Length: 86
Image 1 (cartoon, one colour):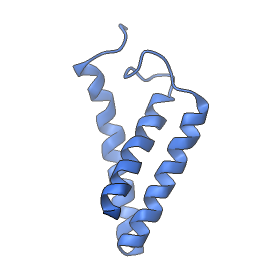
Image 2 (image 1 turned 180 degrees about the horizontal axis):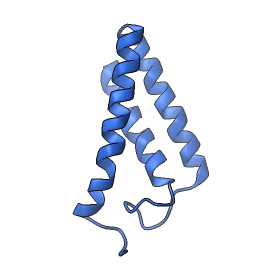
Image 3 (image 1 turned 180 degrees about the vertical axis):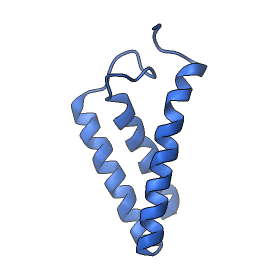
Image 4 (image 1 turned 90 degrees about the horizontal axis):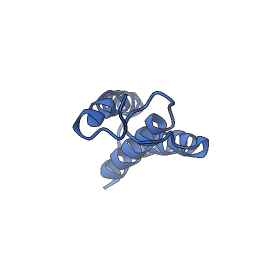
């Protein structure tokens, strides 16, 4: 259960981080700065969840890898349904 919670925290946190970037194309408008800070907090909460589940080295590896995968995949969702024209 904690693993799913950590994954949900990471996906939502990365979505907030990506959406608050000025070069994002997933949303019609850039998200606010407070959501960027919420994304940081959610990603750190995911790290705490991973640290409670597995060892320290595995937690940091899983946390970093999953953030890289989500942040790498988010720009491709704008190809499916673009929010604005370039």
